[in-house]
Structures are given as structure tokens and as C-alpha cells.
Image (cartoon, rainbow, N blue to C red; front, side, top):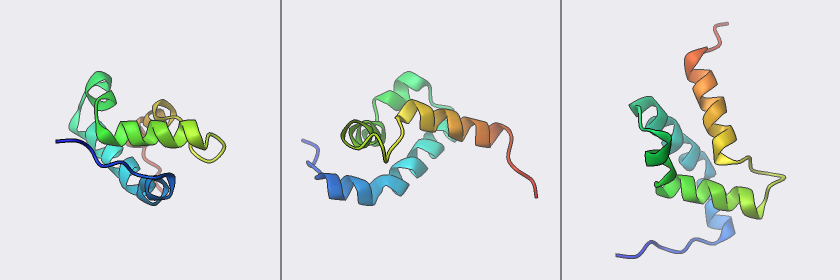
Length: 75
């Protein structure tokens, strides 16, 4: 089975979902190597490579998510 080819508009539309998937993988305790093999990681890398001014690198997003999980803001 081959993965569907998404154009940049479809990738941009899916960005919130890819970030949510990344967050769930981190919460689940997956290792970096396991996460790097996922479809969502690949899509986040593609967005960063094609539109770096608009989308951060997946490693940066992962650091932000981990920080948020470790120290949630309490207001």
C-alpha cells in the first residue's frame, strides 16, 4: 500500500491534526526515533522545508510540546 500524495494546500489544512498527532505520540511515550518514522512527522518536515517562514521544524515543535506537557500554565 502506498501513501497518498498530498499537495501543499492539503498539508497546510492538516497542520493542526499533525501537531495533535505529534502531541499524542509524545504523551504516549514514543521515542524520537519512533516518532520520526511517522506520517505526521514527515508531513511536518515537508511543511517546514517548503514554507520555513510559516512552519517550524518538527524538532522545535516537539520541544515546545514537551515543555508544555512538563510545565503546563496555570492561570
